[in-house]
Length: 269
Ligand SMILES: Nc1nc2c(ncn2[C@@H]2O[C@H](COP(=O)(O)OP(=O)(O)OP(=O)(O)O)[C@@H](O)[C@H]2O)c(=O)[nH]1
Image 1 (cartoon, rainbow, N blue to C red):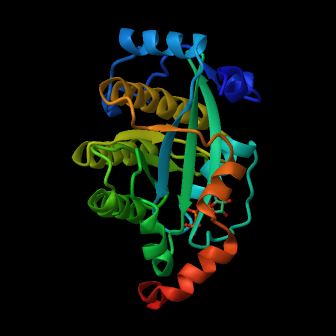
Image 2: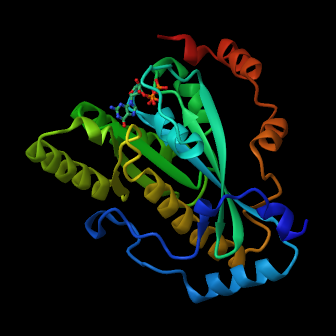
């Protein structure tokens, strides 16, 4: 497929030419602030040749109501809903970026925090390149849980060394500076323990959401291109849109409900 077909419809704010920096260098898993030369060369070749789309599978995990869906919605639809609607099983979005002129699709799997959906959600961890564990910055119990979610996800993902991000949500609700600093300090300790990069965001105001996903896109792109250069038949996908992805996976609400009713471990709560 010509690269122009793959890049059609990617908005200008999804075009990245500079490596996005981390939230703070203290919280970074990869402090390298620029694209490698071989990654730049690869991208230049992709621009001038027929090419496929790099696909990055990303899974959002964390406790109930910490703000996973809100984070995905803020990125993909630039909206925010104050009303809580629990995720049933798993939902997904595809967001496309153009990095150094080459396309990257972020396939975002938004899993349910409710315990009874855990085994459905866990089925979608497999093959994840990126794990994003979300916690509510106003509830430190959810930070403790985030560490547990990460460790559980790492036992299931079959990708070698997925990138891990620990994201503190609802930053807008913390008004006391001392509490905020303390929460960030604790989060950085947890992040270090699980080898994650820490970010603090607000889906309500949009604070750091774009920056966070651009960072994820840059780090993932660099990782996938390096994998592509060492083993050329991996990580390339022709799926470029949410509709194609849905058709490919046959993932409908019906199929999720069926899976749920067939799966005993999801009916235990
Ligand atoms: N003030 C504020 N509220 C938020 C923010 N993010 C999410 N919320 C609210 O928190 C509630 C839960 O958000 P969701 O995004 O649905 O949480 P979730 O983690 O997807 O929940 P589950 O689907 O049950 O796992 C909703 O009422 C949101 O409006 C934020 O950044 N600031």
